Image 1 (cartoon, rainbow, N blue to C red):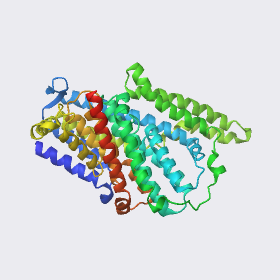
Image 2 (cartoon, rainbow, N blue to C red):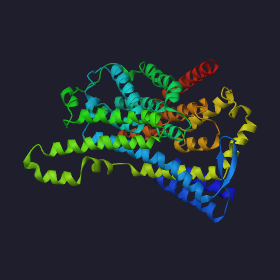
Image 3 (tube, one colour):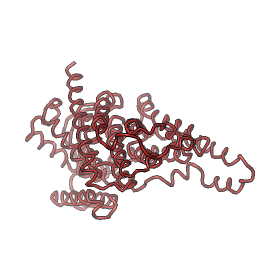
Image 4 (cartoon, one colour):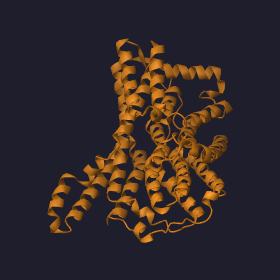
Length: 457
C-alpha cells in the first residue's frame, strides 16, 4: 500500500512540475493528490502517527485528529496569506504603488539596475517576492521601451526579489511556512540570512554591470510628472500604511506570542477601515456622483480587493501542504530522514557544521529551481526533528528561497515575470541563470561563514 501512496504522490508531483507542458493549472493535481492520499489512508485503515519532536519518535494517533491537526497548521498559513494579499490589493486599488515611480529619475542603465534591484530586494521582504515582481515589472514597462533591454532588467528583478524574500518571515511563502511552523523566529532568521541574501543580490548586479546590456542610457524619455503622480490622492498614504501594517505583524507575534495570522488580521482590519473611509471621501467629493456613490456602497475598496485575490494559489497551497502532511502522518518522511541519517551520518541534527549537511541543503536549493519549493520545504519540515532556530532551518530558508532564481520556472517571481514579459525559458537559461548561480553560491558561502562564526563564538 505504501508503494501505491508513493506512486500517487510522485505522479501528482510530476504533474505539478510539468504544469506548463500539460497546460493544466498546478492546483488541480495538488488537490487531487491530496484527496486521493487521504482517501487511501482512510479506506485501507492505515495507521497514522504524530511526530514527537522532543523524543524524536512516532506516537500513534487517529486519522480524524491528524487531519484536523494538519488542516489547522495549513489554515494558519492560508489565512495569513489571504490577509497579506488583501492588503496588497487594497494598496493597488488606490494606485499606491505609483508612488514608487517617483523614485525613478535617472536614464543611466547602471543606476537603474541598482535602483530596481534594491527596490525588488526591499519590497519583496515586505509584500512578498511575487507581488514585488509584478509591481516592478509593471513600472519597468513604463520606463524602458526597448524589449531586449527590459528582459535583462526583468531577469535581475527576479534574482533580487527572491533574495529579498529569503531573509524575511513575510517575504516568501516557504519562509512564512517555516516561521508559522515554529522552525525559525523572525529575529534569528534575519540575523543569519540577511547578509547572505544581500550578497546573493549584490554579486549578480556587480557582474551584470560589465555586460553590454547595462551600459549607456535608456532611449525612452522618462515621464517624471506622470510617474510621480498617483491617480488617487490617498495612494501614498495607503502605500505607507499598508506596508507598515505588514511589517507590524512580526512585532505583534513577538509581543503577544499569538500565531502570525492574528496580527495579520488586525493589520488588515486597520488598513480596510482606512480604505473604507477614503473610499467614502472619494465618492462624496461631488454630489453629482450620487449614482457612483451608490455603486461604491456595494463595491467598496475592500470588496473589490477581495475579488482580486489569487484563489488558485491558495488552493494549491492547501492541496500540496495536506498531501505532504499525509506522508508525514504515515511516518514515511520520518523514516526517510532516518535513512538519510544512516547513509549520510553528517546529515542529522548533530551535523550543523557538517559538509554533507550543507551539500544536501544546497542540492535542495538547486532542486527548488526545477521543482516547486513549497512541497520541498513542506517535506523538509516533516523529515527533520530539529529544534527552533537551528541553523539548518535558516540555511533551508536561504537555499529554497534563492535557488529558484536559476530557472525562470523555479520561483513564483520568475513565472509571473515570464508571463508578463513573455521571457523565453532558454533565453533566461543562457543569459540570467549563471548570474543567479553566482549569487546563490556566493550567498551560501557567506551564510556558512557567518554560521560557523556565530556558533563558535
